Amino acid sequence: MKTATAATLVAAAAKDGFATPSRQRVFVASGTENGILAYDWDSATGTLSPAGVAATVSTVDWITFSQDHEYLYAACELDSFNGKPTGEVASFRVQNGALHPISAENSAAKGTCHVALDHTGQVLLSADYGGGSAASFKVTAGALSPAVWTEHYTVHGPDKDRQESAHAHFCSYSPDNRFAYINDLGGDMIHIYRLDAATAHLTVAGAYHAQPGSGPRTLHFHPNGHTAYCIFELASTVEVLEWNKADGGLTFVKRFHLLPEGFHGISRACDTVITRDGRFVYFANRDNNFLYSFKADPTTGALTPMVRSNCGGKIPRNFTLDPTERWMLVANQDSNLLSVFARNPETGRLADEGKSVAAATPMCILFL
Image (cartoon, rainbow, N blue to C red; front, top):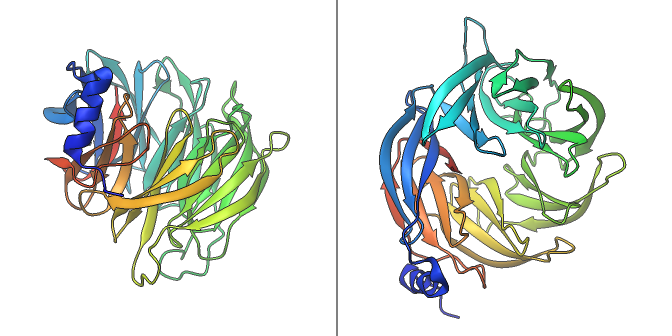
């Protein structure tokens, strides 16, 4: 089977009625002093155009919107904020494609790398990689309260270089918003909590214990409402998990190895993208730098490997589909590039060749 090219997939997109230019604002988290960059996106041609600095908040690892896109929240990977040894969690009002600061609060510890808003828009969780901690914040009209709940993890795994201590890396919520999850890469576990959205308080509900040394990095729920995918950074694997609605627990179903057979060397799995219809799932792997496409059963969430493809640069930190799902955008952190690949929505295949635009230390891509 011949691999798809950008030209053929662009032609297919035009044929399907997406040739009319549609410009949209895109925000990119940047690990620099100009922590949120702005771009304009043309879905007809798959073109990103730089539009300046959206916010000068420093060292942003992750950004996320409220459901109505009226507010944006950012995780800032700092060692000190407001005179305390923590990172920063900030919020902004989005107006006419611009960001206006609303609030900024101390996280639980240094190195804040992720934030996630619950399904009601009332609770924001943060994860601190450097400090191995997590925190919750009450959200009111986009404004963040001081931390309502904090947890400082102490378990660490066998990898002396990467698991010398706990490393909270990712926050997520169950499909029904009753449970919250914190991935601890350093402790080889996913912490499970009951969530009180009215108060932003979390109470312990259990944990998913991973293989020693695997380093669970992210957790994403499939649209079917009962399947989750956990990507393991240190092992470069993905586990398919079944979610238990009664107690929020996660049960192992199947494991996939992302690396090519016979590969030896440093490798770090990174992130996950799931299509809206649940038919395709994509994973990113760093150091040997590729995207891995899978077919997914929309009902069961079962995965079938398809093909590895080019990510466009070095260290794909984050990647995402544009709203038409005809383009995949990749934030290549070490290459200082945003790379764009055409996608065939019927087959799920990504073009082997893409195009790139400069971005200073891109960490996360978000479509307005």
